Image 1 (cartoon, rainbow, N blue to C red):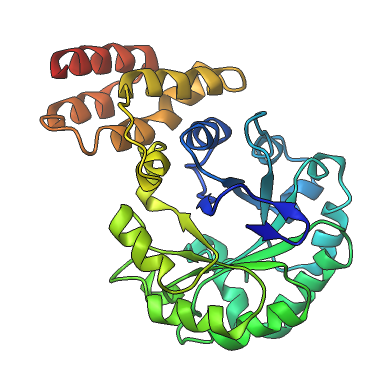
Image 2: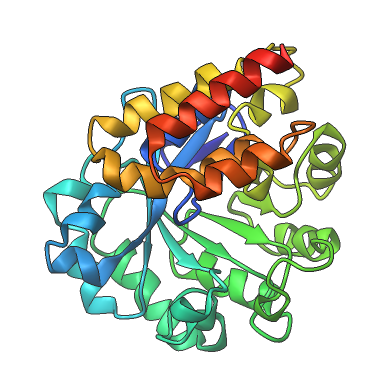
Length: 309
């Protein structure tokens, strides 16, 4: 598919997920067939203050090509200033988050809260479109407490958005129930720009259901937790995965940037996700939760996977 002048070899997108899709995880997903990936959600305002932790989120690896950066915020001036920063020039697509449901995000007027304020959302989008030649895309939900998705999508298209990603739930639903595929289909029928469907894609059956809405691309979020290889499954490619080898590669890539002390804490949730489909892993999960040292966690995992095999 094509977004403005950016060619994308395929239609499977890895969702930007805060605290999940670090550069190593994204690189693994791309190696298994993800067509496109974005950075984790990055605060436009924090970038202005030269925040190191925020700038670390902009790290990408060579196999992420093309690649997008996802920004969040509600102040048009912050976006204007950020878009000219040197660190953002390597990205092929600028994505604006107007869909995040997290309380700490919406309380500041960011994420899905922007869907209650069309005027501010329009100003943020125009600030981006007018200050970069790159495609500007938006990730949205169906609305905050009521479905405004068709009107919101049309407003975004009219103000220069090059593509939209639509998660098929309201903000107040968070991730409960099922994604509303009919609503996603209506958005697709409302606009002429590419639409990427998002919500509950975890296997080939759910992928086919999403594609039946007529969307141009499909974004995988929670279905990829602990499973960067889900893309090879969605593409119908039978591939034997060595999970322990995958975990080690994930960690080794991150070790080039982060300390073992940081990774010992950060990687625990990833390790638990990697174990979620493994039979007899409950005892191992408890051990990992109680372990403070990452290398000790790896020894536990190595022993577990050797016994499984």
